[in-house]
Image: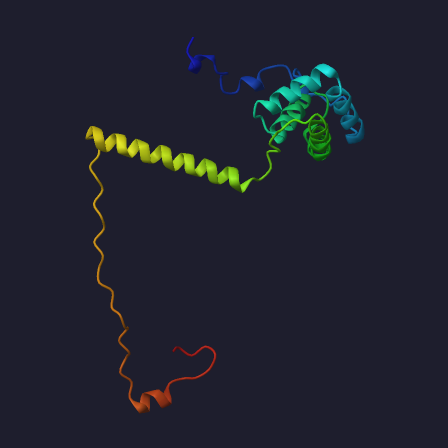
Length: 176
């Protein structure tokens, strides 16, 4: 079946029974402290911790891992989005501490200018390789170098008589 036909029909959600999905009902846990305790209990389970460390070792950054855990809890109706926003930093730090204690190298997923620069470099390299491929295949011609116009070395000063210079307005807002 085509992906186009597998998509829901516009307005389909309005015809289904209200409060049919877990996230449409009131959350099971409304207190952020209890929600954080629940997540800490889940992550300290040996199997869950092994899975989390595996994803961190494979290159998933910590912020994405925490965000995924919290979104899953929201979709399951365990707590609301605002609770997940409140507990995200604490859960991030808790898992970070566990990963450091287990000697796992990981990326926190926070703003990293070096990573951004590396991504930008890779994009530019890819674009340059694509341009070279098009030039070699004849799809694109070599770009012409811009012709530079000679610049005037000195600006011509306007000729002003002594009378005009004396009568010119002076002050903060006067034109120079």
